[in-house]
Length: 238
Image (cartoon, rainbow, N blue to C red):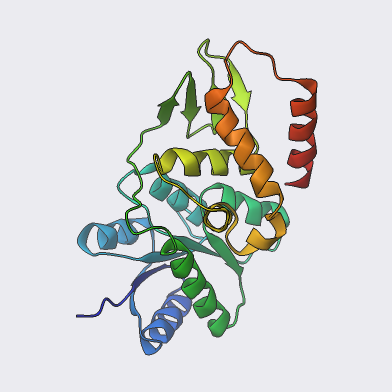
């Protein structure tokens, strides 16, 4: 039997939730609604879900909190599309930093929502068939380094914190989540930037070198001025 993608819509507004689920069902998907985090977790524990549409503005655990919880659970590797009534750039960036794959600002056109869902699922399935995500806890160790996935910074062998930009963290996390796998540039762009990938085609190559360099660079070797200048430049760009 052909697999039918199951979309979980989490929104406390009953009208919006039902409109989205009805539209997705008419578009050929299986769709389930949840009004809050408790109902979301109940569905995830009893059903196979392919993508979560998650509203930010909800009472109790808001969408950002729920997204962070999903990303902190090594058993969950679900794509997340955030819905938000907030138009401020900082709020959108925060949602992406929490691990969302994309966002859509309310009010929105149903066809655009459907297009974004299809794009996210397509990007997720663009990975090699033998690729898998490793289960990892809060700290991921590699070489002489440790990555704190909650605080999103590196620790060297002496426990000294090395700050990472959002782009650096996302790319490094992709490498660590996909060990012993070859990812091409398009896959790195899709995994780290999603729909904005085209804007970063050149910078992804430089960042990939920086991320892989952390594992090769001796801990006690000071960062060169040229390297520091590049980091400063690209952080300003990203």
